Structure formats: C-alpha cells, structure tokens
Image 1 (spheres, protein in one colour):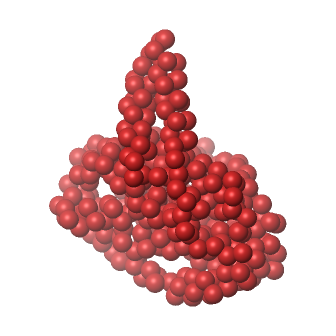
Image 2: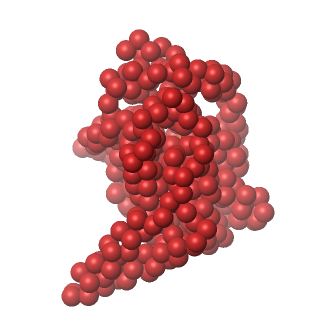
Length: 351
Ligand SMILES: [Fe+2]
Ligand SMILES: [Fe+2]
C-alpha cells in the first residue's frame, strides 16, 4: 500500500516510488487483511429456497438509499480546534477504518466477479451492490484523510498482502458478525454524539447514521446467504461455528477498543462501557441469524471479559519471568470464556 504525507512531493510519491504516512502515524496501520474463499462452492448457492427474501433484499440494495448521503460537503472547521495529539488519534482512526472498508470492498468485488463468471448474474449483481457501498465508505474516509493532507492510495492496498483462505462457512459467519458489529459501533457512537453535540469534532461523524444503515443491510444480506446453506447452521457444526466466531469477534473487539481507548475518550465515550454495549447488542442481534448465541443472563461472559481485560493489561505490562505467567493466565481465561454456556436461538431457517 502507499500513502502520502502532506510533506511529500506534489505528485504524492517519493523518489523511490514509495509513499509514507506522516511520522506521527504508525505504518502498521496499513496492514489490511484480505480473504479468499471457496468460490466454486459459493457459485452453487441454492437461491430458490430464499427466493422471496432475496428479491426483497435485492430491491432494497438496488434502490441505493444512501446514494447522495455521503456527498454532502461538510465544514472542516471543527477539526482545527483539535490539539495535535487528538488530531493524530483521529487520523489513526481514519486510516484503520479506510483499510477495513476497502478490504470489505475487495472481498465483495471478488465474490461478485466470481458469481458473474459462473453465470450467476443476479448474485453477481447483488454482491456488486455490497461492494458499491464499501467503496463509497472507503472513498468517503479517503476524502476525510485528504482533508488532513494524507493520501491513501487505495488501489495499491490490495497488492500489499497475500489473501488468506477461509472456507465459505467461515467467511459468511465472520462477515455477518463484522457487518452487525460495525452497525452497532456506528449507531452507538452516533447516538452518543447526538446527545453530546459538543463532542462532534469532525464532519465525519455527521455521516454515521447512513453508514450504520448500510452495514445493517449488509448483515441482513449475508444472513440471507447463510440461509441458503442450511447445513452451515445445523447440529454440532452450527454450534461450534457460532461459538468460535462470536467468541473471537468479541475478544478482538474488547482488546482493540481497550488498546485504542484514546479515540473513544476523544469523543467523550468510556471505551470499556462502549465495548460492553457493542457486545451485548451484537450478541442479541445475532439471534436472528446464528443457531446459537452466548448466554448473557447469568453475567458470566461479561464478568470474564473484565478479567480478560485485566489479565491482558498485566501481561502487556509485565517483564522477565512474570511475562509467561501473565500470558498463561490470559490464555486460560480466554479459553474458559470460549467454553461458557450458549443458548439456542429461533432464527428462521429454510431446508
Ligand atoms: Fe462499510
Ligand atoms: Fe458493510
């Protein structure tokens, strides 16, 4: 990937043909993950069992409700009031987000192309709509970065890393969760900022509402795809996949939000409470799709999350002999959390 600082030559490329992020931003931000899957299997998707839902979702995506929502020109004045530290927190957030939106675009685009090549035109078009939205999100973030004098060369992002292979079921489970968790993240930030307008420091946040609607719809589209593969959500396999993806997505969210707490603090949000609310809501939403979700009534999952967070911090902060001991405690806690009780959902299934 390439990115250019405002201090770089006017064409945005240095003499070696490389670009760099400004020194206050970490280059590791620019390490996106890309995925590839069983495209031949995907081409055999039995759409007929979900025909009615598919037609409805297709029409909704085709209507493109947010076509004009990301084009409004918003004033950037508010950004000037940020301190240099706060500005770099904001910019790091933008870079991380642009990378994840763009990797979503690449995956949907690839799925769309493969469907079209296999003669599944309607599915190809359907995923093209999803790719369209992610490209729009990435483009919007790219423009916000440009306003900060940072150019991220998106087309080159995809060339940086080899793609990781995941079976189709893994891709659908993880895509569903990443869309729904994205929805809850954006909508909770949006609600907080509506209640605390003085914390809105950048025009970017004016757009979180259409943004979360897009992600929510994407989650519903993926849910529809999952329903076309009834075997994916049945029996032991369905339970194991539900358990693994909920656990890993929640754990990653907790650790990431804790490590990047400064961004949430900038907006006046308590990162630990934010993480907890995102997890509760996402687990609840997932009842509509996965055959099993974690049981939260007994409070064990969230209590263990607090212990995991403390163990993670003490592992990161320890040195010498204490380090492997702290690491062992962290690992045993996350494994115990993985095995916590789940409850069966009554998600609609076909087949
Ligand atoms: Fe997106
Ligand atoms: Fe999305």
